[in-house]
Length: 577
Image (cartoon, rainbow, N blue to C red; front, side, top):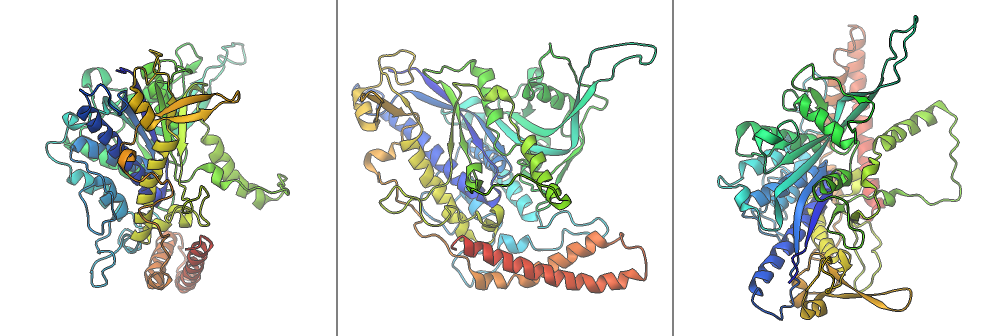
Protein backbone atom coordinates (compact mmCIF):
# COMPACT_ATOMS: atom_id res chain seq x y z
CA UNK A 1 0.00 0.00 0.00
CA UNK A 2 1.37 3.38 -1.01
CA UNK A 3 2.24 5.81 1.75
CA UNK A 4 3.23 8.50 -0.71
CA UNK A 5 1.53 11.89 -0.75
CA UNK A 6 1.35 14.47 -3.52
CA UNK A 7 1.09 18.02 -2.18
CA UNK A 8 -0.94 20.21 -4.49
CA UNK A 9 -1.11 23.98 -4.73
CA UNK A 10 -3.91 25.58 -6.72
CA UNK A 11 -3.30 28.84 -8.59
CA UNK A 12 -6.45 30.68 -9.65
CA UNK A 13 -5.93 33.42 -12.21
CA UNK A 14 -7.91 36.63 -12.49
CA UNK A 15 -11.00 36.43 -14.66
CA UNK A 16 -13.60 39.16 -13.86
CA UNK A 17 -17.03 37.48 -14.35
CA UNK A 18 -15.34 34.36 -15.78
CA UNK A 19 -14.71 33.50 -12.15
CA UNK A 20 -17.83 31.39 -12.76
CA UNK A 21 -15.64 29.05 -14.84
CA UNK A 22 -12.99 28.81 -12.11
CA UNK A 23 -15.71 28.20 -9.52
CA UNK A 24 -17.06 25.30 -11.60
CA UNK A 25 -13.58 23.83 -12.00
CA UNK A 26 -13.03 24.00 -8.24
CA UNK A 27 -16.45 22.46 -7.60
CA UNK A 28 -15.63 19.37 -9.67
CA UNK A 29 -12.08 19.09 -8.32
CA UNK A 30 -13.28 19.08 -4.72
CA UNK A 31 -16.02 16.60 -5.62
CA UNK A 32 -13.49 14.25 -7.25
CA UNK A 33 -11.20 14.37 -4.21
CA UNK A 34 -14.13 13.75 -1.87
CA UNK A 35 -15.46 10.78 -3.85
CA UNK A 36 -11.99 9.27 -4.12
CA UNK A 37 -11.54 9.45 -0.33
CA UNK A 38 -14.91 7.71 0.16
CA UNK A 39 -13.98 4.98 -2.33
CA UNK A 40 -10.65 4.33 -0.59
CA UNK A 41 -12.41 3.91 2.75
CA UNK A 42 -14.96 1.53 1.25
CA UNK A 43 -12.16 -0.60 -0.25
CA UNK A 44 -9.74 -0.37 2.67
CA UNK A 45 -10.00 -4.10 3.50
CA UNK A 46 -10.08 -5.29 -0.11
CA UNK A 47 -6.67 -6.68 -1.16
CA UNK A 48 -7.75 -6.50 -4.80
CA UNK A 49 -9.06 -2.93 -4.70
CA UNK A 50 -9.23 -1.11 -8.02
CA UNK A 51 -8.89 2.25 -6.26
CA UNK A 52 -5.42 3.89 -6.19
CA UNK A 53 -4.43 4.35 -2.55
CA UNK A 54 -1.86 7.16 -2.54
CA UNK A 55 -2.78 10.53 -1.03
CA UNK A 56 -3.26 14.04 -2.37
CA UNK A 57 -3.29 17.00 -0.01
CA UNK A 58 -4.02 20.59 -1.01
CA UNK A 59 -1.41 22.72 0.76
CA UNK A 60 -2.15 26.12 -0.73
CA UNK A 61 -4.73 28.05 -2.73
CA UNK A 62 -3.47 31.19 -4.44
CA UNK A 63 -5.72 33.60 -6.27
CA UNK A 64 -5.81 36.95 -8.03
CA UNK A 65 -8.84 39.15 -8.66
CA UNK A 66 -11.81 36.86 -9.44
CA UNK A 67 -9.49 33.92 -8.76
CA UNK A 68 -8.75 35.38 -5.34
CA UNK A 69 -12.48 35.62 -4.63
CA UNK A 70 -12.96 32.00 -5.74
CA UNK A 71 -10.05 30.98 -3.50
CA UNK A 72 -11.56 32.73 -0.49
CA UNK A 73 -15.04 31.31 -1.15
CA UNK A 74 -13.63 27.78 -1.69
CA UNK A 75 -11.73 27.98 1.59
CA UNK A 76 -14.85 29.12 3.44
CA UNK A 77 -16.86 26.29 1.83
CA UNK A 78 -14.31 23.73 3.04
CA UNK A 79 -14.10 25.44 6.44
CA UNK A 80 -17.88 25.17 6.82
CA UNK A 81 -17.90 21.39 6.37
CA UNK A 82 -21.23 21.29 4.52
CA UNK A 83 -20.06 21.72 0.93
CA UNK A 84 -21.94 19.70 -1.70
CA UNK A 85 -21.28 19.82 -5.46
CA UNK A 86 -23.79 21.15 -8.00
CA UNK A 87 -24.10 18.66 -10.84
CA UNK A 88 -27.12 20.08 -12.68
CA UNK A 89 -28.21 23.57 -13.67
CA UNK A 90 -30.28 25.13 -10.92
CA UNK A 91 -32.37 28.29 -11.25
CA UNK A 92 -32.67 28.56 -7.47
CA UNK A 93 -29.90 28.85 -4.93
CA UNK A 94 -28.37 25.56 -3.85
CA UNK A 95 -26.48 26.25 -0.63
CA UNK A 96 -23.22 25.68 -2.52
CA UNK A 97 -21.08 28.78 -1.89
CA UNK A 98 -19.31 28.54 -5.25
CA UNK A 99 -22.43 28.13 -7.39
CA UNK A 100 -24.60 30.60 -5.52
CA UNK A 101 -21.88 33.28 -5.42
CA UNK A 102 -20.67 33.03 -9.02
CA UNK A 103 -23.77 32.00 -10.94
CA UNK A 104 -26.32 34.15 -9.14
CA UNK A 105 -23.88 36.94 -8.20
CA UNK A 106 -26.26 39.53 -6.71
CA UNK A 107 -29.29 38.70 -8.88
CA UNK A 108 -32.60 38.79 -7.02
CA UNK A 109 -34.69 37.62 -9.96
CA UNK A 110 -35.52 34.04 -10.92
CA UNK A 111 -34.11 32.98 -14.31
CA UNK A 112 -36.64 32.09 -17.03
CA UNK A 113 -39.47 33.60 -14.99
CA UNK A 114 -40.92 36.68 -16.68
CA UNK A 115 -43.11 37.42 -13.64
CA UNK A 116 -40.12 37.48 -11.31
CA UNK A 117 -39.56 40.89 -9.77
CA UNK A 118 -36.23 42.29 -8.77
CA UNK A 119 -33.02 43.33 -10.46
CA UNK A 120 -30.20 41.51 -12.18
CA UNK A 121 -26.62 42.16 -11.09
CA UNK A 122 -25.67 44.22 -14.14
CA UNK A 123 -28.67 46.49 -13.71
CA UNK A 124 -27.60 47.09 -10.10
CA UNK A 125 -24.10 47.91 -11.32
CA UNK A 126 -25.59 50.78 -13.33
CA UNK A 127 -27.20 52.35 -10.26
CA UNK A 128 -25.83 55.83 -9.46
CA UNK A 129 -26.25 55.81 -5.66
CA UNK A 130 -22.49 55.24 -5.18
CA UNK A 131 -21.54 58.48 -6.95
CA UNK A 132 -21.07 61.55 -4.79
CA UNK A 133 -20.74 64.71 -6.86
CA UNK A 134 -18.29 66.26 -4.38
CA UNK A 135 -15.90 63.28 -4.40
CA UNK A 136 -15.97 62.09 -8.00
CA UNK A 137 -17.00 58.68 -9.30
CA UNK A 138 -15.32 55.71 -7.58
CA UNK A 139 -15.57 53.49 -10.67
CA UNK A 140 -17.33 53.04 -13.99
CA UNK A 141 -19.65 50.43 -12.49
CA UNK A 142 -21.34 50.41 -9.10
CA UNK A 143 -19.45 47.88 -6.96
CA UNK A 144 -22.16 47.43 -4.33
CA UNK A 145 -23.21 44.05 -5.85
CA UNK A 146 -19.60 42.85 -5.50
CA UNK A 147 -19.70 43.89 -1.84
CA UNK A 148 -22.92 41.95 -1.35
CA UNK A 149 -21.41 38.76 -2.84
CA UNK A 150 -18.37 38.92 -0.55
CA UNK A 151 -20.37 39.72 2.57
CA UNK A 152 -23.08 37.13 1.95
CA UNK A 153 -20.66 34.19 2.06
CA UNK A 154 -19.37 35.25 5.46
CA UNK A 155 -22.91 35.90 6.72
CA UNK A 156 -23.95 32.38 5.71
CA UNK A 157 -20.93 30.67 7.28
CA UNK A 158 -22.19 28.14 9.88
CA UNK A 159 -21.39 28.95 13.50
CA UNK A 160 -19.68 25.57 13.94
CA UNK A 161 -17.36 26.08 10.94
CA UNK A 162 -13.71 25.53 11.79
CA UNK A 163 -10.48 23.65 11.15
CA UNK A 164 -12.03 20.42 12.39
CA UNK A 165 -14.46 20.55 9.45
CA UNK A 166 -11.73 20.45 6.80
CA UNK A 167 -11.74 17.23 4.74
CA UNK A 168 -8.74 14.90 4.89
CA UNK A 169 -7.45 16.08 1.50
CA UNK A 170 -6.96 19.62 2.83
CA UNK A 171 -3.79 20.37 4.79
CA UNK A 172 -4.28 21.33 8.42
CA UNK A 173 -1.76 24.07 7.65
CA UNK A 174 -3.57 25.28 4.50
CA UNK A 175 -2.40 28.62 3.13
CA UNK A 176 -4.60 31.08 1.28
CA UNK A 177 -2.56 33.52 -0.82
CA UNK A 178 -4.48 36.51 -2.18
CA UNK A 179 -2.79 39.08 -4.43
CA UNK A 180 -3.41 42.83 -4.24
CA UNK A 181 -2.05 45.81 -6.15
CA UNK A 182 -1.09 48.81 -4.03
CA UNK A 183 -1.01 52.32 -5.46
CA UNK A 184 1.46 53.20 -2.70
CA UNK A 185 4.93 51.70 -3.16
CA UNK A 186 6.65 49.43 -0.68
CA UNK A 187 10.27 50.52 -0.90
CA UNK A 188 13.61 48.89 -0.29
CA UNK A 189 17.14 50.07 -1.01
CA UNK A 190 20.06 48.52 -2.83
CA UNK A 191 23.12 49.59 -0.87
CA UNK A 192 25.91 50.92 -3.07
CA UNK A 193 29.60 50.85 -2.18
CA UNK A 194 30.46 53.35 0.55
CA UNK A 195 32.93 55.89 -0.80
CA UNK A 196 33.81 59.00 1.18
CA UNK A 197 35.58 62.10 -0.03
CA UNK A 198 35.65 65.80 0.72
CA UNK A 199 32.87 66.18 -1.84
CA UNK A 200 30.66 63.28 -0.69
CA UNK A 201 30.26 61.98 2.83
CA UNK A 202 28.53 58.77 1.78
CA UNK A 203 27.20 57.14 -1.39
CA UNK A 204 23.38 57.11 -1.28
CA UNK A 205 21.46 53.88 -1.81
CA UNK A 206 19.35 53.12 -4.87
CA UNK A 207 15.65 52.93 -4.01
CA UNK A 208 13.47 50.19 -5.53
CA UNK A 209 9.67 50.26 -5.31
CA UNK A 210 7.31 47.30 -5.25
CA UNK A 211 3.53 47.57 -5.62
CA UNK A 212 2.46 43.93 -5.38
CA UNK A 213 1.06 42.79 -2.03
CA UNK A 214 0.20 39.24 -1.02
CA UNK A 215 -2.20 38.56 1.83
CA UNK A 216 -0.79 35.25 3.10
CA UNK A 217 -3.43 33.71 5.37
CA UNK A 218 -2.52 30.73 7.52
CA UNK A 219 -5.50 28.71 8.70
CA UNK A 220 -3.58 27.08 11.55
CA UNK A 221 -2.31 30.46 12.75
CA UNK A 222 -0.26 30.71 15.95
CA UNK A 223 -0.16 34.27 17.29
CA UNK A 224 3.10 33.64 19.17
CA UNK A 225 5.20 32.37 16.25
CA UNK A 226 3.36 33.58 13.15
CA UNK A 227 2.69 37.23 13.93
CA UNK A 228 4.46 39.50 11.48
CA UNK A 229 4.98 36.66 9.00
CA UNK A 230 1.46 35.45 8.19
CA UNK A 231 -2.12 36.64 8.58
CA UNK A 232 -4.78 34.90 10.71
CA UNK A 233 -7.80 33.27 9.07
CA UNK A 234 -10.48 33.63 11.75
CA UNK A 235 -13.83 34.29 10.04
CA UNK A 236 -15.74 34.10 13.35
CA UNK A 237 -13.59 36.82 14.91
CA UNK A 238 -15.11 40.22 14.06
CA UNK A 239 -11.85 42.04 13.26
CA UNK A 240 -10.45 39.14 11.24
CA UNK A 241 -13.78 38.67 9.48
CA UNK A 242 -13.92 42.31 8.40
CA UNK A 243 -10.33 42.10 7.19
CA UNK A 244 -11.03 38.92 5.20
CA UNK A 245 -14.07 40.57 3.60
CA UNK A 246 -12.08 43.67 2.66
CA UNK A 247 -9.29 41.58 1.11
CA UNK A 248 -11.91 39.66 -0.88
CA UNK A 249 -13.39 42.91 -2.18
CA UNK A 250 -9.95 44.41 -2.87
CA UNK A 251 -8.65 41.51 -4.93
CA UNK A 252 -11.95 41.51 -6.84
CA UNK A 253 -11.65 45.19 -7.74
CA UNK A 254 -10.69 46.25 -11.25
CA UNK A 255 -8.78 49.42 -12.21
CA UNK A 256 -11.34 52.14 -13.00
CA UNK A 257 -14.02 49.52 -13.75
CA UNK A 258 -14.74 48.50 -10.14
CA UNK A 259 -14.22 50.39 -6.89
CA UNK A 260 -10.74 50.47 -5.24
CA UNK A 261 -10.37 49.61 -1.54
CA UNK A 262 -8.50 51.51 1.14
CA UNK A 263 -6.54 49.77 3.90
CA UNK A 264 -5.86 51.87 6.97
CA UNK A 265 -4.62 49.78 9.90
CA UNK A 266 -5.21 46.21 8.67
CA UNK A 267 -1.72 45.50 7.27
CA UNK A 268 1.18 45.72 9.71
CA UNK A 269 4.29 47.28 8.18
CA UNK A 270 6.35 44.49 9.77
CA UNK A 271 4.28 41.87 7.93
CA UNK A 272 4.66 43.61 4.55
CA UNK A 273 8.42 44.00 5.00
CA UNK A 274 8.84 40.35 5.97
CA UNK A 275 6.66 39.31 3.05
CA UNK A 276 8.76 41.44 0.70
CA UNK A 277 11.97 39.71 1.82
CA UNK A 278 10.53 36.27 1.12
CA UNK A 279 8.79 37.03 -2.17
CA UNK A 280 11.64 39.04 -3.68
CA UNK A 281 14.25 36.58 -2.41
CA UNK A 282 16.02 39.34 -0.46
CA UNK A 283 18.50 37.23 1.49
CA UNK A 284 20.39 38.40 4.56
CA UNK A 285 23.76 38.43 2.76
CA UNK A 286 22.52 40.77 0.02
CA UNK A 287 23.30 44.48 -0.05
CA UNK A 288 19.65 45.31 0.49
CA UNK A 289 18.17 47.54 3.16
CA UNK A 290 14.52 47.73 4.15
CA UNK A 291 13.82 50.82 6.23
CA UNK A 292 12.68 50.30 9.78
CA UNK A 293 8.96 50.72 10.29
CA UNK A 294 8.19 54.37 10.94
CA UNK A 295 4.53 53.52 11.54
CA UNK A 296 3.12 50.21 12.80
CA UNK A 297 0.61 49.97 9.95
CA UNK A 298 0.88 50.56 6.21
CA UNK A 299 -1.91 52.60 4.63
CA UNK A 300 -2.60 52.06 0.92
CA UNK A 301 -5.28 51.91 -1.76
CA UNK A 302 -5.69 48.58 -3.56
CA UNK A 303 -7.04 48.61 -7.11
CA UNK A 304 -7.12 44.91 -7.98
CA UNK A 305 -5.46 41.58 -7.41
CA UNK A 306 -4.41 40.88 -10.97
CA UNK A 307 -2.98 44.16 -12.24
CA UNK A 308 0.57 43.05 -11.39
CA UNK A 309 0.27 39.36 -10.49
CA UNK A 310 -2.72 37.84 -12.27
CA UNK A 311 -1.39 34.25 -12.27
CA UNK A 312 0.08 33.75 -8.77
CA UNK A 313 1.61 30.32 -9.36
CA UNK A 314 4.95 31.73 -8.21
CA UNK A 315 3.55 32.47 -4.74
CA UNK A 316 2.07 28.97 -4.49
CA UNK A 317 5.23 27.23 -5.68
CA UNK A 318 7.38 29.27 -3.31
CA UNK A 319 5.31 28.06 -0.37
CA UNK A 320 5.53 24.44 -1.57
CA UNK A 321 9.32 24.70 -1.95
CA UNK A 322 9.71 26.27 1.49
CA UNK A 323 7.59 23.50 2.99
CA UNK A 324 8.84 20.42 1.12
CA UNK A 325 12.34 21.34 -0.02
CA UNK A 326 13.97 20.77 -3.38
CA UNK A 327 11.81 19.10 -6.04
CA UNK A 328 12.29 15.48 -7.07
CA UNK A 329 12.56 15.57 -10.85
CA UNK A 330 12.10 11.82 -11.33
CA UNK A 331 9.25 11.44 -8.84
CA UNK A 332 7.56 14.79 -8.14
CA UNK A 333 5.85 15.02 -4.77
CA UNK A 334 4.43 18.51 -5.07
CA UNK A 335 3.33 20.96 -7.73
CA UNK A 336 0.72 23.46 -8.82
CA UNK A 337 -2.17 23.58 -11.25
CA UNK A 338 -2.88 27.00 -12.75
CA UNK A 339 -6.55 27.46 -13.63
CA UNK A 340 -6.59 30.33 -16.11
CA UNK A 341 -9.81 31.36 -17.90
CA UNK A 342 -7.86 33.81 -20.10
CA UNK A 343 -4.42 32.29 -20.77
CA UNK A 344 -2.05 34.72 -22.44
CA UNK A 345 -1.38 32.51 -25.46
CA UNK A 346 -4.94 33.20 -26.63
CA UNK A 347 -3.88 36.78 -27.36
CA UNK A 348 -1.05 35.91 -29.75
CA UNK A 349 -1.55 37.38 -33.22
CA UNK A 350 0.22 35.57 -36.02
CA UNK A 351 1.18 37.77 -38.94
CA UNK A 352 4.01 38.15 -41.42
CA UNK A 353 3.80 41.94 -41.21
CA UNK A 354 4.93 42.64 -37.67
CA UNK A 355 6.32 46.16 -37.31
CA UNK A 356 7.99 47.01 -34.02
CA UNK A 357 9.01 50.49 -35.11
CA UNK A 358 7.06 53.11 -33.15
CA UNK A 359 7.89 56.73 -33.84
CA UNK A 360 4.86 58.88 -32.97
CA UNK A 361 3.98 60.33 -29.56
CA UNK A 362 0.55 58.67 -29.60
CA UNK A 363 2.04 55.34 -30.63
CA UNK A 364 4.63 55.46 -27.86
CA UNK A 365 2.02 56.38 -25.25
CA UNK A 366 -0.22 53.56 -26.46
CA UNK A 367 2.59 51.02 -26.13
CA UNK A 368 3.96 52.38 -22.85
CA UNK A 369 1.21 51.15 -20.50
CA UNK A 370 1.30 47.49 -21.64
CA UNK A 371 5.11 47.65 -21.59
CA UNK A 372 5.15 48.76 -17.95
CA UNK A 373 2.48 46.21 -16.98
CA UNK A 374 4.26 43.33 -18.72
CA UNK A 375 7.52 44.20 -17.00
CA UNK A 376 5.77 44.51 -13.63
CA UNK A 377 4.24 41.05 -14.07
CA UNK A 378 7.61 39.32 -14.34
CA UNK A 379 7.87 36.40 -11.93
CA UNK A 380 10.78 35.91 -9.55
CA UNK A 381 13.15 33.35 -11.07
CA UNK A 382 13.13 31.15 -7.95
CA UNK A 383 9.89 29.57 -9.22
CA UNK A 384 11.12 28.83 -12.76
CA UNK A 385 13.24 25.84 -11.72
CA UNK A 386 13.50 22.60 -13.65
CA UNK A 387 11.62 19.86 -11.85
CA UNK A 388 8.91 22.11 -10.46
CA UNK A 389 5.68 20.37 -11.42
CA UNK A 390 3.34 22.98 -12.89
CA UNK A 391 0.41 22.45 -15.23
CA UNK A 392 -2.27 24.76 -16.61
CA UNK A 393 -5.93 24.16 -17.31
CA UNK A 394 -7.82 26.56 -19.54
CA UNK A 395 -11.28 26.68 -21.17
CA UNK A 396 -11.97 24.32 -24.05
CA UNK A 397 -15.18 23.11 -25.61
CA UNK A 398 -14.94 20.32 -28.15
CA UNK A 399 -17.17 19.40 -31.05
CA UNK A 400 -19.43 16.38 -30.37
CA UNK A 401 -17.47 13.18 -30.88
CA UNK A 402 -14.37 15.03 -32.12
CA UNK A 403 -11.18 16.28 -30.51
CA UNK A 404 -11.62 19.63 -32.24
CA UNK A 405 -12.53 22.91 -30.58
CA UNK A 406 -15.87 24.46 -31.48
CA UNK A 407 -16.24 27.42 -33.79
CA UNK A 408 -17.03 29.90 -31.02
CA UNK A 409 -14.92 31.02 -28.04
CA UNK A 410 -15.33 28.59 -25.13
CA UNK A 411 -16.42 31.13 -22.50
CA UNK A 412 -19.78 32.87 -22.58
CA UNK A 413 -18.55 35.29 -19.89
CA UNK A 414 -15.49 36.25 -21.94
CA UNK A 415 -17.19 39.07 -23.84
CA UNK A 416 -16.30 42.69 -23.03
CA UNK A 417 -12.89 41.67 -21.63
CA UNK A 418 -14.55 39.42 -19.05
CA UNK A 419 -17.28 41.84 -17.98
CA UNK A 420 -19.86 40.24 -20.30
CA UNK A 421 -20.85 37.64 -17.73
CA UNK A 422 -22.39 40.29 -15.50
CA UNK A 423 -25.13 40.83 -18.11
CA UNK A 424 -26.88 37.45 -18.11
CA UNK A 425 -27.04 34.52 -15.66
CA UNK A 426 -27.19 32.09 -18.60
CA UNK A 427 -23.61 33.04 -19.49
CA UNK A 428 -22.46 32.22 -15.96
CA UNK A 429 -24.39 28.95 -15.81
CA UNK A 430 -22.78 27.84 -19.06
CA UNK A 431 -19.28 28.67 -17.84
CA UNK A 432 -19.70 27.16 -14.37
CA UNK A 433 -20.55 23.81 -15.92
CA UNK A 434 -17.90 24.19 -18.61
CA UNK A 435 -15.47 24.58 -15.70
CA UNK A 436 -16.78 21.35 -14.17
CA UNK A 437 -16.57 19.50 -17.49
CA UNK A 438 -13.08 20.83 -18.20
CA UNK A 439 -11.97 19.74 -14.71
CA UNK A 440 -13.30 16.25 -15.49
CA UNK A 441 -11.25 16.06 -18.68
CA UNK A 442 -8.19 17.54 -16.98
CA UNK A 443 -8.23 14.95 -14.19
CA UNK A 444 -8.86 12.09 -16.62
CA UNK A 445 -6.42 13.09 -19.32
CA UNK A 446 -3.77 15.58 -18.16
CA UNK A 447 -3.01 15.42 -14.43
CA UNK A 448 -0.93 12.23 -14.63
CA UNK A 449 2.48 10.98 -13.47
CA UNK A 450 4.55 8.00 -14.51
CA UNK A 451 3.71 4.89 -12.50
CA UNK A 452 6.28 2.42 -11.17
CA UNK A 453 4.62 0.33 -8.51
CA UNK A 454 7.95 -1.27 -7.56
CA UNK A 455 9.80 2.01 -6.87
CA UNK A 456 9.46 2.97 -3.17
CA UNK A 457 9.91 6.63 -4.11
CA UNK A 458 7.20 6.61 -6.78
CA UNK A 459 3.83 8.16 -5.95
CA UNK A 460 2.08 4.91 -6.95
CA UNK A 461 4.36 2.50 -5.08
CA UNK A 462 2.50 -0.69 -4.20
CA UNK A 463 -0.65 0.17 -6.16
CA UNK A 464 -2.79 -2.85 -7.03
CA UNK A 465 -2.80 -4.24 -10.56
CA UNK A 466 -6.60 -3.86 -10.57
CA UNK A 467 -6.23 -0.11 -9.97
CA UNK A 468 -3.63 0.15 -12.73
CA UNK A 469 -5.92 -1.68 -15.14
CA UNK A 470 -8.79 0.66 -14.23
CA UNK A 471 -7.01 4.01 -14.52
CA UNK A 472 -3.79 3.61 -16.51
CA UNK A 473 -2.75 5.40 -19.65
CA UNK A 474 -0.11 3.82 -21.88
CA UNK A 475 2.23 6.36 -23.44
CA UNK A 476 4.47 5.32 -26.31
CA UNK A 477 8.13 6.28 -26.10
CA UNK A 478 10.51 7.17 -28.92
CA UNK A 479 12.02 3.68 -28.86
CA UNK A 480 8.60 2.06 -29.34
CA UNK A 481 8.19 0.94 -25.74
CA UNK A 482 5.30 2.00 -23.53
CA UNK A 483 5.21 3.57 -20.09
CA UNK A 484 2.33 3.46 -17.66
CA UNK A 485 0.93 6.73 -16.36
CA UNK A 486 -1.63 7.08 -13.58
CA UNK A 487 -3.85 9.99 -12.49
CA UNK A 488 -2.70 12.06 -9.54
CA UNK A 489 -6.38 12.52 -8.63
CA UNK A 490 -8.38 9.48 -9.81
CA UNK A 491 -11.86 10.45 -10.97
CA UNK A 492 -14.02 7.69 -9.51
CA UNK A 493 -17.03 8.74 -11.60
CA UNK A 494 -15.15 7.42 -14.64
CA UNK A 495 -15.63 3.82 -13.50
CA UNK A 496 -19.37 3.68 -14.03
CA UNK A 497 -20.13 7.09 -15.53
CA UNK A 498 -19.88 8.82 -18.89
CA UNK A 499 -16.37 8.62 -20.36
CA UNK A 500 -17.07 10.84 -23.37
CA UNK A 501 -14.79 13.93 -23.11
CA UNK A 502 -16.98 15.86 -25.57
CA UNK A 503 -20.17 15.67 -23.50
CA UNK A 504 -21.20 18.83 -21.66
CA UNK A 505 -23.83 19.51 -19.03
CA UNK A 506 -24.76 22.74 -20.83
CA UNK A 507 -24.45 21.79 -24.48
CA UNK A 508 -25.74 24.90 -26.25
CA UNK A 509 -23.78 28.14 -26.26
CA UNK A 510 -26.01 30.91 -24.83
CA UNK A 511 -27.09 33.81 -27.01
CA UNK A 512 -26.93 37.51 -26.27
CA UNK A 513 -30.40 38.99 -25.72
CA UNK A 514 -30.13 42.21 -27.71
CA UNK A 515 -33.72 43.20 -26.99
CA UNK A 516 -33.24 42.92 -23.22
CA UNK A 517 -29.95 44.81 -23.39
CA UNK A 518 -31.55 47.73 -25.24
CA UNK A 519 -33.78 48.24 -22.19
CA UNK A 520 -30.63 49.15 -20.25
CA UNK A 521 -29.79 52.09 -22.51
CA UNK A 522 -31.45 54.63 -20.19
CA UNK A 523 -29.71 53.35 -17.00
CA UNK A 524 -26.39 53.32 -18.89
CA UNK A 525 -26.89 56.91 -20.04
CA UNK A 526 -27.92 57.96 -16.53
CA UNK A 527 -24.73 56.49 -15.06
CA UNK A 528 -22.52 58.00 -17.77
CA UNK A 529 -24.08 61.39 -17.12
CA UNK A 530 -23.61 61.02 -13.35
CA UNK A 531 -19.94 60.07 -13.81
CA UNK A 532 -19.30 63.08 -16.05
CA UNK A 533 -21.02 65.39 -13.57
CA UNK A 534 -19.09 64.01 -10.61
CA UNK A 535 -15.73 64.15 -12.37
CA UNK A 536 -16.24 67.67 -13.75
CA UNK A 537 -17.76 69.10 -10.58
CA UNK A 538 -15.29 71.37 -8.83
CA UNK A 539 -12.95 71.37 -11.79
CA UNK A 540 -14.94 74.06 -13.59
CA UNK A 541 -14.72 77.16 -11.41
CA UNK A 542 -15.95 79.75 -13.90
CA UNK A 543 -19.65 80.59 -13.49
CA UNK A 544 -19.77 81.37 -17.20
CA UNK A 545 -18.54 77.92 -18.24
CA UNK A 546 -20.70 75.90 -15.84
CA UNK A 547 -24.01 76.15 -17.78
CA UNK A 548 -22.17 75.49 -21.06
CA UNK A 549 -20.49 72.39 -19.61
CA UNK A 550 -23.85 71.27 -18.21
CA UNK A 551 -25.42 71.40 -21.68
CA UNK A 552 -22.54 69.61 -23.38
CA UNK A 553 -22.43 67.02 -20.59
CA UNK A 554 -25.78 65.71 -21.79
CA UNK A 555 -24.57 65.65 -25.40
CA UNK A 556 -21.40 63.78 -24.43
CA UNK A 557 -23.41 61.33 -22.32
CA UNK A 558 -25.65 60.55 -25.29
CA UNK A 559 -22.71 60.01 -27.63
CA UNK A 560 -20.82 57.85 -25.12
CA UNK A 561 -23.95 55.78 -24.43
CA UNK A 562 -24.55 55.23 -28.13
CA UNK A 563 -20.92 54.16 -28.56
CA UNK A 564 -21.24 51.72 -25.63
CA UNK A 565 -24.39 50.14 -27.07
CA UNK A 566 -22.74 49.68 -30.47
CA UNK A 567 -19.52 48.25 -29.03
CA UNK A 568 -21.30 45.79 -26.73
CA UNK A 569 -23.47 44.39 -29.51
CA UNK A 570 -20.49 44.22 -31.88
CA UNK A 571 -18.41 42.27 -29.36
CA UNK A 572 -21.13 39.67 -28.78
CA UNK A 573 -21.68 39.39 -32.53
CA UNK A 574 -17.98 38.79 -33.09
CA UNK A 575 -18.12 36.01 -30.49
CA UNK A 576 -21.02 34.40 -32.40
CA UNK A 577 -23.40 34.98 -29.53
